[in-house]
Image (cartoon, helix red, strand yellow):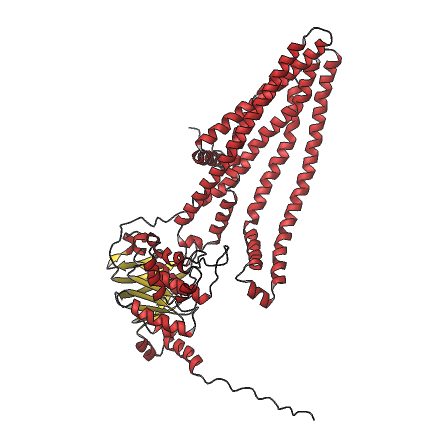
Length: 622
């Protein structure tokens, strides 16, 4: 038996590429159709009907010129000429009507499509895991997807409809021109090919250049944002590093410019050669027609069909071939969108629903490693905390405290080990239902450019209109300043929108605490809850914490030992591993890592202030 001959890898890759492109084309058309079936259908029909009009206009124009030539010899009446003119005017009116309806449908379809695709991107973003947002590649894909929202899907659909329309136009106009000679139409069509080849080649190169520049462009945009940020302008001005930022921003621009100039020069050179070859082919076709005209073999109307048909056929062929290359290029960009939409998601509602308060949380040998990395952020972490108890996490930056909180709140899934809630494996339950029993203030808490009421009530959106509940949370957080704002709870906050009131860092943190208190949760997590507060506010907040945490599970992360001392159990993390555990008194007695950190901070409060530097006294001059 003869072994089957397998195609080479390049051929298989090419076949796979084309299969992928066809799948992307089908998905894109599905996006367009679902966005607005009515406008999609109207646009397609008006375009196809309008595509038959150029040939009709050419033919009526030919008849009119032939009739005028005969009218000079008295063979045609004025009424016959008016009838042909009426037909030509009617065709023009019909063309305008079809164009108007088609353009309106295209605009409405584009708006519906942009909304539909934007919604899909936002829905996808809400389904991604938290780890995905800590990956730079995800941001690149997100930016690329958003960049293609406006024009690419609609471009694929309009170009595909345009291909069908161009085929109708070419077939009908070509039939008229074919009567003028066998070689005329092929030469005119061939004259359109070089320009399309050049356009397609450099269109693909332009796409590849943009893909290569995605990361650098994001860095350049970030540098620009540093120079225009309202929150960073003070530091930028004070340290005076605007020239450094501008220099780096310009370096990226110059790098882009070098690539662009090389692309433009090559495209211009090849474009000129394409235009020259097209002109020579059209000249050859014209010479053939003129020879027949000199021999009296074609009429004046026939010659008009050739003259007007050249531009029509060239435009149609260029549109046809550019449509093919345009669809290919747009599908390359659409792949950016689809690759983002195909990112793996985490269904926060998957699993059994959790109900009731959380009484105990137990970590059993829990470890965590970020995807695509080989370093464990946490290893073998074990502890238990019960209702009515407070657990504090202590450690230097990078020890794994925030990662542990993300695991506890089910934002992350452990790479190893088990997290138990009331003695049951947390993995059994849907993250969303468990998170409803948890409330948190993060170190990098949100500052939402909304009203003060919304800033608090976002913790439980089903109670957005619960003004007494919001006011109670504000009072417990010590955010009395809200009552003094113009409009009180309805006062808009932040500088982003007109009329917004900017708050200090401490005021924003108090609102974040109010947001934590507003949710009726059995687990409270405080990640540096007093970092932005002054000494008096910190003392008031710590006192409030004692009141709020008596009948709940509380987790504290803080570098301030005045806050940490509240905890029943203190866990000391170093390099992702628990190195010490116990109460404040027990850990101080052990004279280990915790005691060293505590003594280091205490020295700053207990040490005598340095003596002033003595300077020689200068006697007054007489």
